[in-house]
Amino acid sequence: MLFAKLSRRSLLISSCAAALAACSRKEEPRAPASSSPSPEFDPAAMVSAMTDEELLGLVLMPHAFGHEAEDVTDASKAANRAHAGVDTPAEMVRKYHLSGLILMRFSAEDPTAGTNPTSNLDSPEQIGRLTSGLQKAAGDKLPLIIGIDQEFGAVTRITSGISALPAAMGFGAAADPGLTERAWRGVGGELMRLGINADFAPTADVLANQGNTVIGSRSYGSDPAAVAAQVTAVLAGLSGAGLAGAVKHFPGHGNTDVDSHQGLPELDQPKAQLLEEDLVPFKAAFAAGVPMVMSGHLDVRAIDPGVPASLSKKVLVDLLRGELGFKGVCITDAFQMAPITERYGPREASLQGLLAGNDLILMPENVTEAYAGLKEALKDGRLPRERLVEAATRVVALRQWLKTHANGGAELGSAAPVAAEIAHAAVTQVAGCGQTVSGPVRLTGGADATRERLAKALKERGVAVSASAPTTVQLTGFLDTAADVDPRAEVTVSTDTPYNLANVDSRIRLAAFGTTSFSMDAVADVLTGRAKATGHLPVPVKGVDDGC
Image (cartoon, rainbow, N blue to C red):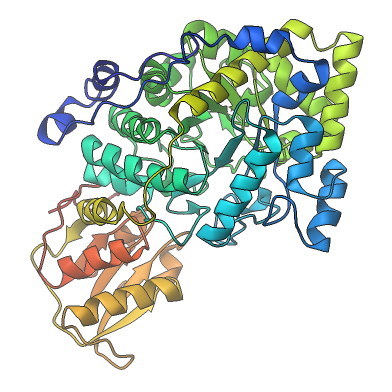
């Protein structure tokens, strides 16, 4: 059996036993769907009947250019030709017998922006047409894996048309795994309605370095057990909605200060510390039956110094499969990232990725080259056929699971009530407990759209907003530092990591962990005394209290 059953018992053991206090005072996660393949389905038999060309395509999961499966702009055609020798995404699926595609959206404010070369995502209607066309191109034997990085917070690929959640750190602040599971089951259903069946979430990294901006609020916090509880709850929600989740970035990107999109971070911890801290959420996810794990471009000095974990057999076979017992699909982080491209060309990178123990190569730098390199290596024996068959069998089993659990999804926007609930539960007040504002106020800082949302929420609650008001409410968000805030502002609201709250003397200080309308409504409720802030800081902030 490829995947362990994600039963109520296994979820509660792996999640709540790791964070008993949090689970005992909050609602329990509901039982997710089983992620076991259908007992009458034999992935090995299906793989044994495939040609070499079909097997090679199964282990590649690239991106493509264009907003439609069969009809794209001339610019997208040119980009697809350079990338894969085809005109359209659908042609790419057919030509290479791909197991899946990842859908992208470029945003300059995204910490992963450097490896987002295209945008496939616009409106819900467009996304639905694209995913439907891609599935048609794949045929009807097994569904194409259509993946996305929809973490919410800084990494949000679909920014409109579906219910919006706060960043992962907001869930850590709420500390309610049951609510986490409901929220992710809800938005998972909306993703399914759009034709997306795999989400490269949650981030299982334990944040141990305040200077780690590439992970930052993408992490659920700094306590391994609490992060484990949140991670397994997210996975339960996704699987309950019929999606395959993926924990990342194995074996943990939280204790670093280098962005793996730009360089190779080093993990200097002894192996015992890795097992006791960084790997705790991953181990909980494996016990709960997570279908996918994403290997990180991380130099694990205690295990295989100088080699990215994503290319290390010692990390992905000896540790991941041998010691930790993971049975599912191992997918690489994007192979367009600097730690890979600066060391290897697309042919050698894809080969080394498979030989290291990955089953899926995500976003190879060039599809034509990656496929040709694997084909040549299979022919000359550098790629043992049994390794290719092993990887392909796992991928086929995952696709069968997706077929078994496919459903029509949920109505778009139907998760709004639970999204609002988690946004309110996340708000954490670290100064001025019980104090309110009555206006008028002046809003500064943050993105224009975030200020507009907060202004609307305050006005709806009777607080006037004026550029000349004497009371300042300032927003501080992604990548802001002490130099970006006014320490004398009466109110400071952090919308990303809460570290800047230590750099101000504001009488009221709040951490919202999100910029959505739901988060700004929650902030406005606290500022006007309509609600109390019930969250607690999921990471330590020097000199700042942990909630009211």
